[in-house]
Amino acid sequence: MLRAKPAEDVTLPCNSSRDAAITKLEWNRTELKHYVFYFSDNRQNENYQDPRYHGRVQLKDPKMKNGNASVLLKNVGIDDTGTYECWVITHSNNRRKRNERELVRSVNLIVSEGSEKHLKNGDANDEQPEGSGGHVVLGASLGLVFSSLVLYL
Image (cartoon, rainbow, N blue to C red; front, side, top):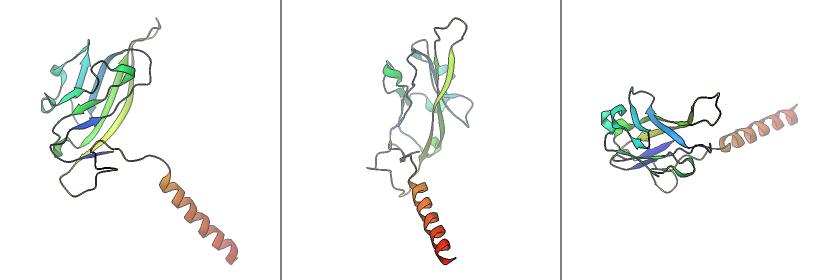
């Protein structure tokens, strides 16, 4: 999850794990019909892009080295809150297979003016740490309850 304040620039991260060259890149928002960002034939194509994103989205690395398909979303507003998906299409070297389309990343962006804390160091691009931190606390609590019941019996 990414958090940002209005007028900030946000990086929507996406890194393809495939070694093949990216032939198309599609960034969409699940609740919109048009793309947030569409890249094909080695260039951005705004014809397929939702008008509210024109001039506000660009590749972080125009050469997409090492599968880096992250984009920079500039000057975010509260209406940019939503779930963004990064779809990568790579050329297959296998004659029987067509180009392969893969959902690489889904990012939930929350833009708000409130006093909500930004994660980590206050950078709008910081993501919530993933992992089992909450599961460890729950597991330890359940272990104590179970131990107490065994001792009580």
